Length: 314
Image (cartoon, rainbow, N blue to C red):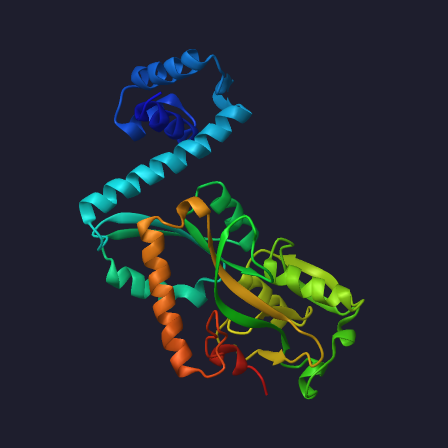
């Protein structure tokens, strides 16, 4: 086994064809075919097979692709470290963002400090981003959760509350606040069922025996806001999740803990990759600045000033 075979295997899975893998690696198609034929023949295994025009990887093949990506990623990082020393004049950082508005300041500082590092950001929900981290497709991800994911390295960086918002003409607007029980059987406009914010919200209400009625489920945050503004139902969000909207008003729940935490997560194998280390260094610096500015900041994280959402409250 050699690195050429690992690169060929990873490129084949990534592109789905021998011609695509060859183009990706700058080789001829026969060269890629020979490399992978030798790999399978040497160990007497089948890593993939043709299904019509498509390729289907075996369970072993899928497992080895993940390991190949990890090995190649470590080699790339090793070479980048040697060539760029400790100041990251080059390299790559693949990061997933579930609440991108919360971490753009971090990314801005990181990219200004390390302009040679190419950042590729993927926007998605926390559950899918965690799977991408576990599948070696992302170096790290920013996710929402109530508790750390025990499979990963977790770095808590901010705490937020989940809050309700309704249309300006909703009856709740005239109240100083509502209790959790008042949400029972009330119409709710919700993000998709994999949304961590929604999962935390529903789990806390379920513990109280409270079950809102989901009348509309949407994948788009902006579309959800439009549905709430139209009076279809109430929505939920992290307190700093969106910019002021004159059509909406925030509603306070007075008797239930709806706190949620933002984590950066990565695989233990990736914790010491130089770009990941550098990003966490920036996170720690910004946390330190926030602690100095806020006397009530948590010991292991910071709380962003909740200006945007709180401007919605009367």
